[in-house]
Amino acid sequence: MATIQKFTRSKGTVYRVLIRKAGTKSISKTFTSKKLAIQFAESINSNREFLEAYGYQNNVKIKLSELIIEYLNLDYKGKDQVEHSRKLRVWLNSLSNIPAKEINANNIKKGLDALPSHLSNASINRHKAAISGVLTYACKRGYIKINPAKLVPSLPENNERTRFLSEAERTRLFSSCRASHWDKLYLIVLLAITTGARKGELTKLRWNDVDFERRTAYVSTTKNGQPKVLPLTDSVIQELDLFNKNDSSLIFASKVKENVAYCFTKPWKRALEDAEIKDFRFHDLRHSCASYLAQSGASLLEIADVLGHKQISVTKRYAHLCIEHKSSLINRVMGGI
Image (tube, rainbow, N blue to C red; front, side, top):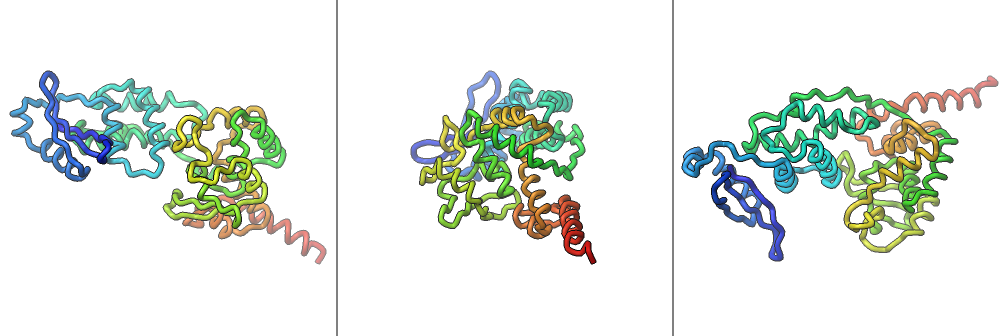
């Protein structure tokens, strides 16, 4: 069975097609084009006569770690490879790097059950989708016959969640974020709650995306595929000024690798605990932004524009807040008539 490995050398990236069988010496061929490497590997894998002559009996057991690397290098087309890789590392730990052929639906079910209990159904489904993508690729390459992840049903998702911070909760959260050992926790929380931007959009921001004169931040990659500009409040600009590097590095860079976003899960959880806030996720800061806008009289169209919703139907979860504001306004103005 032919597998593909990616190597980055001084003269550029090359792709090596490796044909191996347990107990025999591997043979390989190197290409500078990924497309040609895939075509060659597929021609080898579909050539039964060659495989039989080589002594291949369809028993090469590619390990999960090798499969994941090959998938990420050759097939993954998502927007956030860092987050996707993190989910796959969870699976690597859960499945103990067993051969891909030995993974079954029961393994997948146990892996999902072992995920942290605080994760929402949507997050659990995203973890399942991550390993399912790898196993679908394995099917295409002929490493396995069926994708066992597809035999495990997805959990029902409640996409109507609108948990948002009360004024008292917001005050306590800001205070605990300022006291965090990670000095940028308050900044990213303030950005999230004032712009409604997603976590992934904020962690990808670079200093050269921020226009301090116009008080905006440019987000090149969003969930709906359309870039957008975030208006920044005075308080956000002031906080950004404290860290401004005037270069193209990530604003929320890792302390170890400057080109990788800092993982702030622990300081975020600690801040919530210190602020005594329960049942609250980072994404709920986005809901908080939308809810504050609705309560202040913004229309659904205006809220959709701020959040970057393509479909107004997605924004309708905040409709009741808009109606409450309008009712209060009408009663205040027209109540004496």
